[in-house]
Length: 379
Picture 1 (cartoon, rainbow, N blue to C red):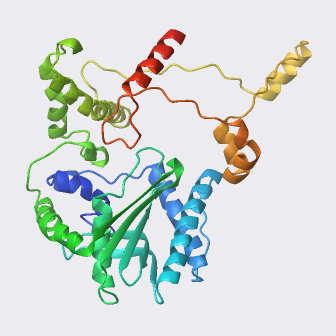
Picture 2 (cartoon, rainbow, N blue to C red):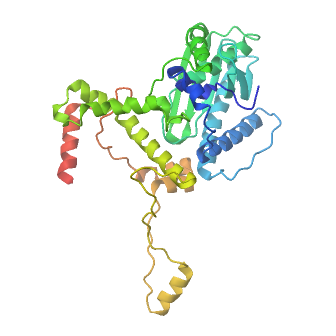
Picture 3 (cartoon, rainbow, N blue to C red):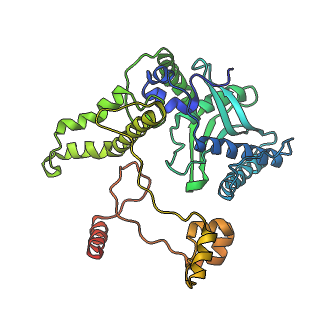
């Protein structure tokens, strides 16, 4: 195996929905963001702590990304994983545990392999647990292409030991309090591998199939210049910017379905154009680079303090209570709950229209209308 899989399980959701995107994206350089680097550091720490629990040889990693917030998130994940480990020990005499295990899926797609964060195998169940350290998008384990691919790789290994009946896929996202788990039978998972992953993976490797824009475009390296993505969003221009009241219900629903992705696409295009102008001197017709607005700053707070006091001004400082998030980070979640829990409340959120797929519970029309009226009256 090379350093990177050509068809990575983490990209499968995009690749299976837009098969030619794999070949298209290969002409662009790999992207390494600070968020990805922080995630790698967090996974390394989690691996060390879990191996320590399993009494395996390990050395604690070091990283500039190890903030209190990241360490706390990793500790939450490790606590969950070690709980699953102990439960497996109680259930099975000879469970198998693998931390950061490379899994090969090339039986279904050539050059497809990845790393499963935590694998727990008992006599009937193979569980794959995936740590997500992002703060933004909530990820569900249900029908998750990345984890299903890992599951197929784990089944190939586990078949030598046990007759696995259930593959349990788990997402643990501590920074946004998201825990998701989903079971699929080994038979159904293998069926998906043969009927979906294998044929669509083969198409992807040769760049066959049609381009299909969607939420999966977010992490595609070709997203800035992809014509199919642009055409998908520009279809809305065919409505000729009619007043909302003149659009049909179906047209409004179509706009709602695409609005969030449209805003992300526009932001992506702007970010790409600005980067090209700054780093490569690209000139875009009708646009120019300017210096942004800025706020005044003191050259030295110590010198300012001395000068102000010398002039007779002493009331030059202000003090305020730190916010809830900073206070919780300072104390730790348990101490925060014990000391300040009774002094914290969460007001009702602003009424918002979201897709049916959103996991939040729907509110009644009467409640929404009353809350909306109250907000308008207070504005």
